[in-house]
Image 1 (cartoon, rainbow, N blue to C red):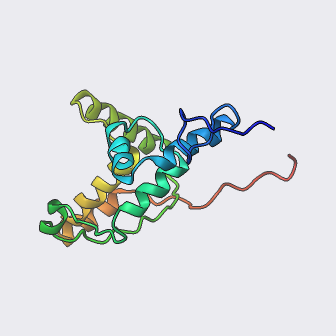
Image 2 (cartoon, rainbow, N blue to C red; image 1 turned 180 degrees about the vertical axis):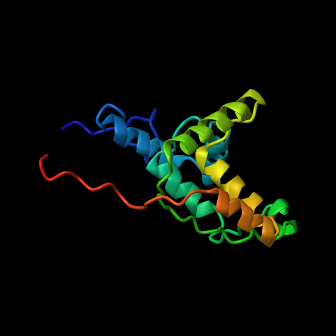
Length: 157
């Protein structure tokens, strides 16, 4: 019988790489690395994703509690005012007055201030708000009253 001799080139606690799979060998090598070197290796190469073994070792080294810091900008500023609720509505308008909206939009665009129809209507409301009672009544009397609602459909169609 031949006595079995151990190979002195490999340490006793390491498995031979020829008999282990690639992932098992990598995990065995990473397990032998000290946690300090794993943490510095992870910080040194942020482009490389950390494996589960590295995450477990680095998580054990990091402190358990995290404190959130508020940026200085948010501490010094005043609280934001509450948002105004928007109301969606529809209305009926004669085509000639509707065309005036397009003309006013073109005038504003010529002065390098593009504007939307809703902004024009809101500006008109602000102007009406600033009028005195007598001026408001005079302006409202110049606006003709129109029949509101959708036009009726013909029964023959």
